Length: 112
Image (cartoon, rainbow, N blue to C red):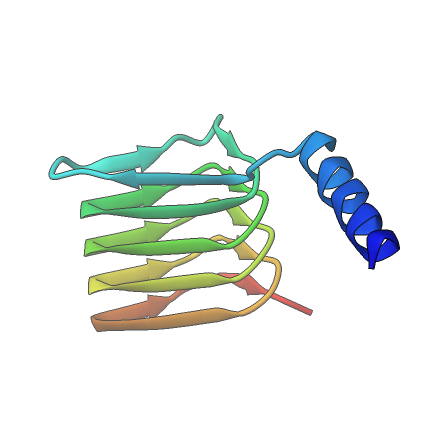
């Protein structure tokens, strides 16, 4: 029993001492939101507002919701978007899942 407790304590201590980074960015606002063409978001991006525009690079998944959502940038992971008017015209590395009143996928490169 002591061996199990010792191993568990060592495991937890090692886990807590390891450097950890959270790769996610959460943005929510009542104002229009834009990720500019020169911006890069490491990891996943969760963004919500009346008008959401993603022109830059997201190095993870994009979760976007708003009255209008426009993705013209580069998303290395999946895109999950919902809004009244959703337009995807950028490069998406994996899958796109979209719901909205008007959905446009125009000139986008999606997954392999």
